Image (tube, rainbow, N blue to C red):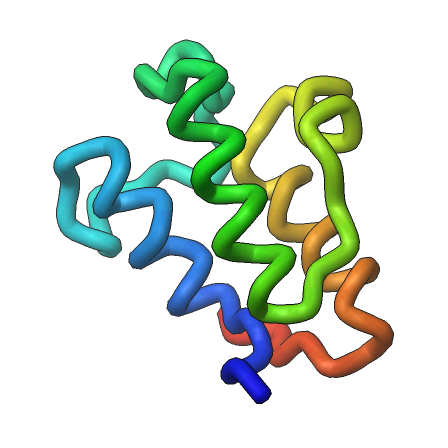
Length: 85
């Protein structure tokens, strides 16, 4: 079974697709403003689903910041998320 998603791994995934270091990811930033396109978002969704988060493209598209994405992912893991600060 894959490792549950943590905020640290969430940041690392975003950083990989944004060509940043994890500590450079601004969770208050809007995903599209940060430079994510729909193909990258779909790829991230597939990765997060594999980690146990039940989310879809529309779920993320309705949210306007990476922080809101993390909140949703944490909720959709069935309580297994680690709320790292």
